[in-house]
Image (cartoon, rainbow, N blue to C red; front, side, top):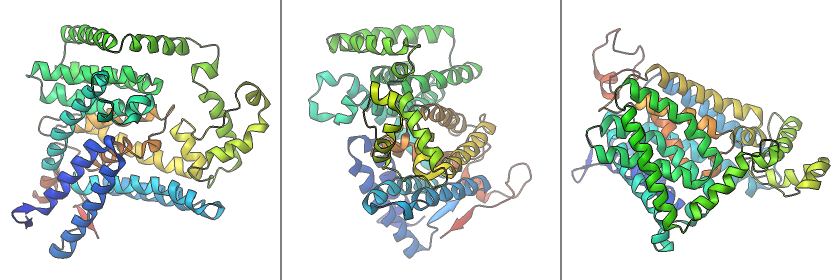
Amino acid sequence: MFKINNISYENVALATLVFSISFTIFAPAVHYIGYSLILLILIYGRIKYKTPFLCFPDKNCRNVSFILLLFFLWSAFANLIYMSDLELWGKGASVYLEMLIGYLFAVRLLCTERSRKAFISFFIPATVFIFIMILVKDQLPPQMLPKRLTMNGNTLGLYAVMAFPYVFFYSMWVLRNKIFLKYAGCIVVLLTAFISFSSGAWLSIAFMLPFFLYFAAVNKKINIKSVIVAMVLCITVLFGINVLSHGGVFDRFKIEKNQILAVNNMDSLTNHRYTIWRIVSGLVLKNPIVGYGRGSLEQEYARALPQYPDVVRDNNVIHGHAHNMYMELAFSGGLPSAIFFIMAFILLLISTWRARDATENGVPWNLMLFVLLAGQLVYGLTGDVFEARRDIAVIFWTSLGIASVLPKSCLSYENRISSPKDKNTQPKEEAENIL
């Protein structure tokens, strides 16, 4: 163990990462400063102690990392020669760089059982506390919460989608004997998702919830009685929040209900996303290989809009986001960009699903992250996590990194690289360090 004044420099880097992830919602500077400090700390460790700058524990992690590297290189640089505005190109390309950095830092610092325990033990209570602040925001000074959380339902909805698997699985598996804490965290997350009034968030949680209920029931973490009690508590607390907001919650719900019931009008049902998808898909077909560059949709949308007279007649608003992760990736970096990212996603889904029965300190990490990844695939149909680069996306980059380094059995990372070789417990390939 390498130490600075009796404190491991890696522990300092880990604490910085955990703090940055947990509180980045308050300001982008939180994780930008955190990432900068982590980089300096790891460089220090490399120079002074010759420790590896990056670690890839197994073949699956190396494969995912390689595909994400290709994704970054293609998405960031394939369309560079077509970009007339270098500032616009740099702003768009930096999104993919942030994704890669966040992923690699998670791979490096959350590759051990101890570090993952430290992360989730801090992240869960911090997130639930922030959600409680959001639920009672009308009783708090306005400056205590960032405006994008109180005014942008999509941001709040994505936040709840990211937190849902972590809070639910941790609560039921680890806090199973602490009745109040176990249900309080889950109820807070569900209520936060509800008051976001984000259809994408509702759809994602509706998709993830059956997975959770099934595996929780199979593992005897819940029963019919506990589900009914939780539902009653949710409804009771929701009525209380509606009273605190002077009826604002139910008024907003009526608007969302009318949108959901507008099944005969695709534009109303999708909140004008259908029109956006039509135009963006046409743009992708015109330039399917390298795309147009992230951040250029608004100007390309404006150029393409006159070709759709029915859209101009009904709604001639210029949109700057595709409101679909897959279309946005294909538009920005061409179809190869979307394919690379989906390939990495599929590898992680397969690996986490295969090890779904493994637990670590009581936490079903593989199952939890499988549900998170599956939920994010659904969320990508109506939203784009890359647009949340300023805050929520940092949680996602970290989750990708954790999923890629998880042991595929009950063995921890330390055991995988130190235990004697055995065909039943030891992977064929040792952990590989790359400068």
